Length: 418
Image (cartoon, rainbow, N blue to C red; front, side, top):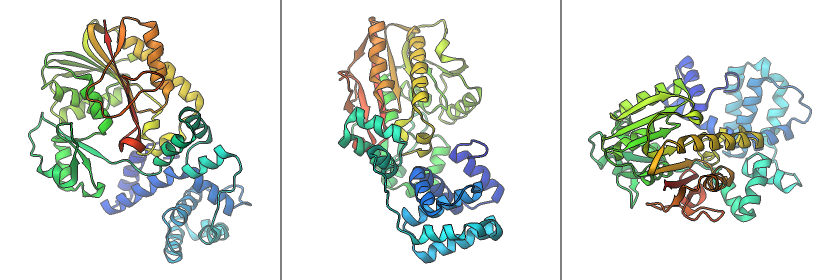
């Protein structure tokens, strides 16, 4: 991950192939990767507290010290288990490499660390494991109490959801075994226990009969409500799960024009839509912010790049990549994409804008600004409505929060062109 700037899953499977790792080893490794990343700043604080005189630590050693701190302070391993872990590290990294850090390892596994930081935002950042600027930002927007609920919820993963795919025939019995049927939405299950997703269910995923898709994202597709025979623009379409869901809602009748700027991501889109039995979509590699399709869409879906603040619980690495300047750049990109796609919507057609962000500047603030510049559009009431109402007076917008709705954080706004 660090050297090649890879994502967690890509790095994991590349290393797993090199080491010929078993599925159990990969599962254990995946948990270590995700959880040490989730608690990263707090673990680094614990390591630095135990290594005050350390100046330069080799990369492999620093990663191991972080894992050791996680095992001690988060997983609560006992001394015997920690000693076994250190012995394994000596074999992997070499005892000569680790010898200068024996005292540090001893401190990590023996000392009880407390977070001794006076500044409230800095202390909360270590307690909830987020960047300090983001902690301050969230608390200023949502207030201290709600802000803490949002931040603390990111310390544990949200449940997985699966939906059946009507474009492929499948019985619901297998899903009923591992999940709880979500009331009010056809063919959607909330997984009661992640490890219960066994080989039979993974085979169903592989064959396209069921899809793993977050509940908030599923709701977004239903809110867009494409009908049989519609012309649909799916902007920022890769990797394709959303396109496949739209095709299912349309019963594979009509046309979906799926656009994404990345050729590599559109290759994944093609594999995904083929797997899910989508027959009515064709991909276009283009800059969505400069779209000129020479067509009028009945339905447009805009799901632009965003801060991913709603998926910090699911993908903790995202929170360490975000910064105030990147957030501002994202808002500018989102604005350009929304402006561009809106021009492709026919009179009477709809545009559904969604992000996996909880921040108003990417959501209500952006939509409010767009509506003031484009009075021919109006914010429409949504159906279904499972989330919370939008902020800043946009009550017809729909929000999902992980701490309230047990799914990814998400925002949906449905606009109609008059």
